[in-house]
Image (cartoon, rainbow, N blue to C red):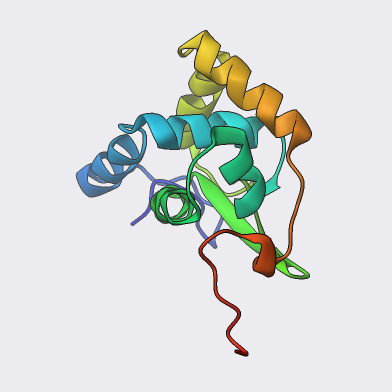
Length: 137
């Protein structure tokens, strides 16, 4: 059982496994930085890469952990997979953790730099992502 949304809309108490998964997701600086960026606005992988100045594989791997724990959700938007905070489906415990994170002054210099880079981040096509090969060739 996940700590987050349920189809019947009932709020369930998280299991020990759910809490461990959520805290493990929050135990990494990169994932916290990603969440702070996503609290600003929804982003595709390439925008998060630019904001945090990290590789595509590192970005995707950490987004997968956050999505698996229920903190973020993704949707297709043309060429891009866009990520956002999973506010609609999170339970009370996860909402409290996210609100705490929103207000936390976590290494302010790093967060300021991420925000500054995010303000200049642009969505680019798959061919422009370093290390990504064109599957047609």
